[in-house]
Amino acid sequence: THVLTERGRATAEMSLVLPPDTQGGIDVWLQKVDAQTQATLKSMVTDALSNGDNFLPPLDLVTNYPSQICSLLMHLTWSMSTLHAFQSGKTDLNGLGKRNINIVVELTGLLKANVQLSAHHRIVVENLVIVQMHLCDVW
Image (cartoon, rainbow, N blue to C red; front, side):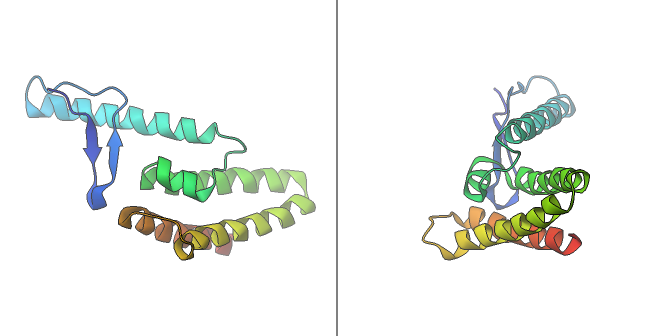
């Protein structure tokens, strides 16, 4: 028997990269599940960051990654883009401000548009709107 996925609240599910077997006591296999969960999350973050300019379109982000990865990627993208803009000058700073607002527009567009989102994905998008609005406020 193997643990194939880890399921969180609101039916967020993540398939483990290397499913651990359930041999041994519960404490042993829970450690294995935890180790594989961490390895899987690291793999997902690495995969997502390797896409393009480190920014995935919101629909791709929400439908391909668990909610905690989506939130983390929003923060990482904002941090990396901000650092690059500060190093590059005023033109990049203005462009980044517009890009941050455009991300909010794209996310809210998913909620308004005729996009078929599951109840879980809708909640993820709503939370990402809040995260992105806070990032815009910090900007």
